[in-house]
Image (tube, rainbow, N blue to C red; front, side, top):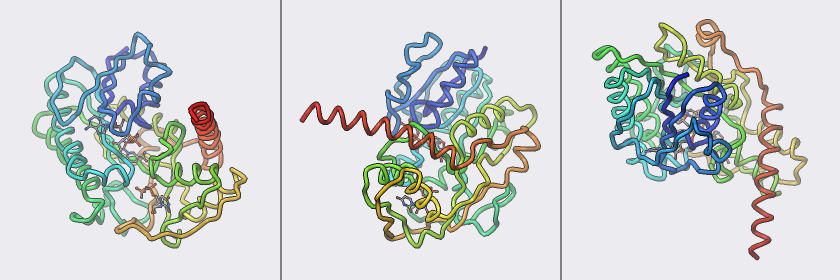
Length: 320
Ligand code: NAD
Ligand code: UDP
């Protein structure tokens, strides 16, 4: 049993990670400022005596005795991270500094949630960890991707200079239950639009690609990486199945049996044209590969949103 700190633990991925760590018999401290996270996400285990919730902003230092730190705190949807870009940069950089300071002081192992965004609009396909990326340092996505690049740099600097025991993972587009209905990312947008019978909004021509990983697979990879010996990373974690955004829209429409129309809207600036992880390293070093394919993962996510949206509608009707 270990005492484990999960920053961003009330968010989408963080809440699944907390759940899994508790199930494995650990003590879990969830630290979150609830910018995009929610108490609803942690409701099913908040009364577990092995679980502690701390409302805290990681841009401020914190001191606690822990064995491991998963640093996940950071808004991940472009809509949310562009809402207050300066705060997003502070969260990535000051957050990483504070968590690395803590790791150094209490000799904890620390895992940084980095992102496929560090590859920007990639010129190497699929993306391997040795690719340095193609990011725009002053564009609308830079608060997120440059923040994460700096967080990686901080991790490796603390490792080389102070011997901090680090792990860096680059997470590719992940989806599943507990995404917020207004999260703004493509999978939740399309599913909510399809269930509601609203237009499904494809940005641009929909020819850009993404590779979608189901959250349970991702959490499995995070835990394997944290507990691997002699491996700092960076290691890509994602599902190599690559789809165009139009293919995703059509899949979701069919799965929901929706009457929605698929419409095209403007493509956001600097939207990466293609993205697919090369996961050779994760498979060789961690014995990890995703097992949930897109159809199965989407079916589980649709079932989740069907139930959440139905509950929301029933509550709305009671108030009316
Ligand atoms: P999310 O927005 O659901 O979760 C982020 C959590 O961090 C939320 O609970 C939020 O309230 C919290 N948070 C934000 N700023 C904070 C601050 N200053 N102090 C304390 N808490 C703060 O997003 P997610 O999809 O669960 O992403 C989790 C992590 O994984 C992020 O670091 C993200 O960059 C990374 N990641 C996610 C994806 C993905 O596809 N989901 C892809 C690449 C990387
Ligand atoms: N996208 C879309 N419609 C939406 C939301 C997103 O077509 O309603 C596109 C977006 O332009 C991008 C892809 O879907 O090309 C993935 O977007 P998301 O915000 O989920 O994540 P990203 O990988 O861009 O960070």
